[in-house]
Amino acid sequence: MQRRYLALWFPYLASERLRRRGSAGPDERPLVLVEKDHGALRLADCDSQAVALGLTRGLTLADARARIPELTVVEADPAADRRLVEWLAALCDRFTPLVALDPPHGLVLDITGCAHLFGGEAALRQRVGRSMDWLGLTVFASIAGTPQAARALSRFGRCAISFPGEDEQRTLPLPVSALEAPSQTVIALSRAGLKTLGDLAGRPSHTLAARFGEGLVTKLRRILGHEDARITPLRPPPDCVVERHFPDPLQDTKGLEEIVARLLGEAGRLLEARGEGGRAFEVSFFRSDGAVRRLQLETGRPSRDVAAILRLYRERIDSLADPLDPGFGYDAIRLSVPVCEPLGTPQASLDGRAVEEEAVADLVDRLVTRFGRERVLRFVARDSHQPEQEAALVPAAAKSNEALPWPVAQPDEPPARPLQLFEPPQPVETLAEVPDGPPLRFRWRRVLYEIARAEGPERIAPDWWRDGPGEHTRDYYRVEDAQGRRFWLFRAGLYGRETTSPRWYLHGLFA
Image (cartoon, rainbow, N blue to C red; front, side, top):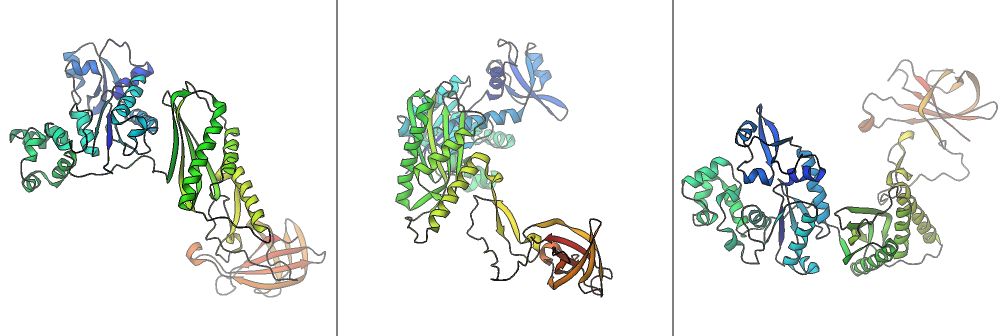
């Protein structure tokens, strides 16, 4: 299928942003936005009135005031302009999931295979134009077979739609400024009598490349439609997308769950045909005023169970601090599955463990949906001999394919590790018969404990690749005092080899 692109250019975006906010002064006065350039204030943008009066970007503010004394001057805010363009990109996401920024003040939409949903390319272009006009924004929109051709036609031409095979014919009359090359290059081309892209296309490409660089020739080929350079969308395209568009804005929020359930069923059938299930789901609600609300759902395992996912959707709706507000109504609802994984047909387990695991997984999914991924954690084993690094907390919904098995305790043997460790280990004062032997007594929190039994040592070397060469070897002892209390002590440092005065620490208590 031949690619099709819709380029949008907002020539007065900065000034119209200020007009929409009501902070640009009276509408009858021309508006310019200025920025400092090498100590001088220059025009960064102009509204339509200022452009009609002959003002252009790059002109100094002093020259502009000399020509038009009555000017409304506002400092430029590129960050605010970018935020508005990104908001417009989210609005255009209702037309296609492939939307890319096209600086300055533009967007490019990959509408391949999407136009028929809106009645064709002409109807889609008109619908986008009406949406922008409703927002009070001026937009020039063109459709072509490459992003560069669509951009050139929207910014330097007046062709609305270049049908397949017409890109070269439509772009040849454009001026050489459509290449958007450096000013000295444009001047050099004009002095050589090359004023249009057609003039350049008639010259040998190797001659142009030798004089002006291969980049100019490459861009010329792309504008003429000879080479397609795909866009990089703001949001990665999901693996599976289903959506509903409404002829009239939907204001009845009671029917939203039924529509979402239908979309889940449709997505489930698509995933089942591919032998896959979804790990992440996103429901997007597109309001008629341009606002977009997205709800993310996540599962701990691949799933296409409509009932289970719908329960997560209800949990997500109930946990919203800001409830869904349809405003003037929803134009479209989209269900995206950004993460898919293989999922076979489930089989029954004879021991019943599969049912238990599924119930636990459902509980984790509901907790994650209500409290967030980073607030629902579980312990996993790590490949380390250091006691405090043998376990780690990870999100419970994270994949566990590479999880290590937990060590299995020997039957009829006491536990080798306490269930809970002190972090950090607490220093104690000890008395031992020999420097490298077990302690006879120790003082902890001002209390003296007499040791009746001791087992050890269990020598644990440091993880040199993680802790570095400065860490000492540890000798751990399981000790019991006269009252039957059991402690886990270790001596840090080998006497005579790593230190002359080893330190003792209490690392945990046995139950």
